[in-house]
Image 1 (cartoon, rainbow, N blue to C red):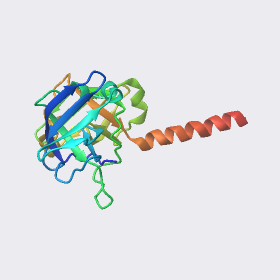
Image 2 (cartoon, rainbow, N blue to C red):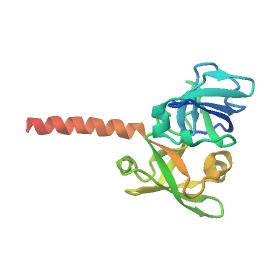
Image 3 (cartoon, rainbow, N blue to C red):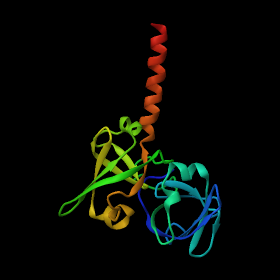
Image 4 (cartoon, rainbow, N blue to C red):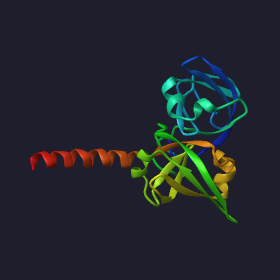
Length: 204
């Protein structure tokens, strides 16, 4: 589990094509400091497992399902990526509950800069719209953000200078793709409500 508070920007140093999978190697500092084999690190919001490590890099195997459902397969050598280690029991939950299980890939459709922040509009698959509400939580490329305005097909977020400086969202351009994970609590509530209303309908 993660919190959506990006710890650092890593750099992709190698992408090894294995046909139906890739081996992704990333250079990092903070997230590598205590990483062991088998540990989980979120890369642009996608939970990956440390398979190998050196003093300055770590490598993960990325399977076909992950390549199909996320933007990880589009990474190239030199790309910067958001990194976060799995949360520990003593860590503050500064963002919200993030699983590292990407729901879909969205697209940046507009950026509106202001003096002290920037509003970014992101297009999402229609099936995600029902999980978003104004002032609710959304994870974009592994970054926990508050939804400013939730539409049927797009939503907006407001990025403060800290987020612009410390995450990939500071340089994502219009047309770029981003990983999206909606609030898992909303999905659980939906399932419970559906089960309850289904049972009620059968009784009636």
